[in-house]
Image 1 (cartoon, rainbow, N blue to C red):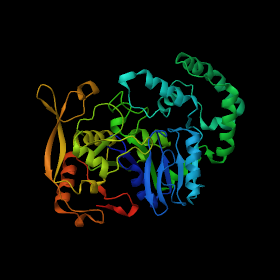
Image 2: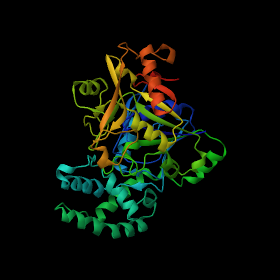
Image 3: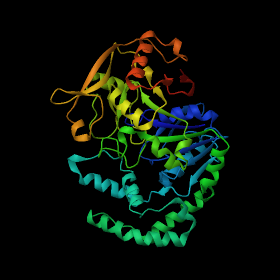
Image 4: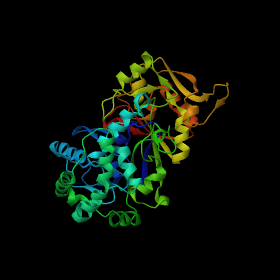
Length: 421
């Protein structure tokens, strides 16, 4: 059984807690794309952990975790995460790294911040972690990979070709340039710390697939931040959709058995760009306060809004979702009225039921329908039949609008606060 877990909104939906819940029965968990520009928060008996690169299955020693070839890895962040986990008593010996994963270099964050600043009032909202420049180097065939750390001569040759271009850009922005020997010394330190984890992935993956192992594929961010199908250019630099999961993990696409889309019972977003069902009033602030909606990576306040069924239906089709995991239902417990975005109204009055291109999306208004709240606590509920009737009707409406059955519901951050429907 191979299961892909993807974001069905703008990211920050709670994918980490879903993967942590499902990883109990997994043999292998693979992070398939993204970098350390977004975090997955996991709460379990060992504490609260914010993971940016390490797969959320790391808390099960019997489960092998792999940072896949589609990921951009910042070794500094990775080593910090490993140290934090180990300081909490977590065994990290089960973590492996694909030798084909791209390596985020010190100049990538520098360039990211400079390029974002140059945009002035038209900023994208990047976290300035260097993800965009690193993926640009990958596509431009200038990138360095984790496997290069094992080949110092090759690494020196590659870096010697890349660094003049990097320094030319830094000089253009008036920033300090970087020295080859300093970067090589940094790479030597990373090689010493990570060499025992870096592997050729296919000898691990092929037998796992052929023997029917239970594999979980973990994505980062959500479809509305997808490079091709999101709110471009206010997107990430990779594809967090299920179609890329096979590529980024290193698996045949036909081997994926199910795709679970994770969505909050409302919606949040970090960064700039159109956000149709956004709430900028006191209700939006209430959702932010109750849901503790602040970025796990940057601490930035998240934008909040009503559940956007158009966007999730968009995600459902593009990902081929077989089920939904609805998180943070409990955040809505105190609301007397809850709204759902069911369509978009164009400037000429027409209504559409799809996500248009970004210039059009900036002009639409959300079409909202109202539902009564349940105004009762749900945090101790552990089964569908225990949910208040109004909460059941709300979730049933989400199923109807998105066309995807709800498989899991979460009413709190703890592992035990998620239940199967």
